[in-house]
Image (cartoon, rainbow, N blue to C red; front, side):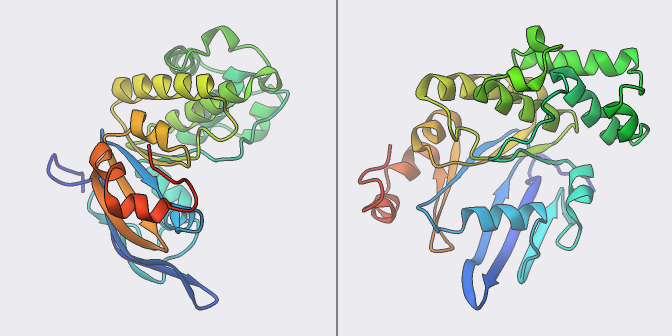
Length: 261
């Protein structure tokens, strides 16, 4: 089944998760359409990461349903959700230090196609095809990394490394990309550049974004809609500006941030 214009690509209905009897996520309902940029925020311990992992299939839900394009994927593993269009990046960057920037994307492309042995890629014996190189270089150009295509990833700045992670995710052709704290460790200018590049890539490729982020200013600048968790419960959702200005959200952040945005 494919999502229609009126049907969100991702839907979570009544999702609940507990650990050792402590509820981390309380019967949360969310929906994200393809092409949307949605933020997921909340104070420390709000349940953001747990909900994120439930959507991805990293941890099983106790109750509730997760759907992609109307299909129930609640019990599907991560790789099968990825094949249905769910991509992700990690807060902690994990790159092969000696592999070049382009090689990271080539490995992701071979994984997507399922027609190349990973060990051949790592040993340099899997000679890339012209169309593979073309796809990789298009993504690198989109992310402003074209001039670094042949550079080892260990030479990248933190911001460039985060863009390379985004590039790997884009090689899987996601319909929705889940970003986990992409601004973590970046300074203000790097965060602004990251947001601008992500927005350009999102518009160019047409995928949706669900962003878990601690930097509220980045969320305010990048997203159109925002969801707020507090103590595992969804306390606010709607247009980002309105949500960040709401009394419920300000109260949730008091003592940790003082004010929001």
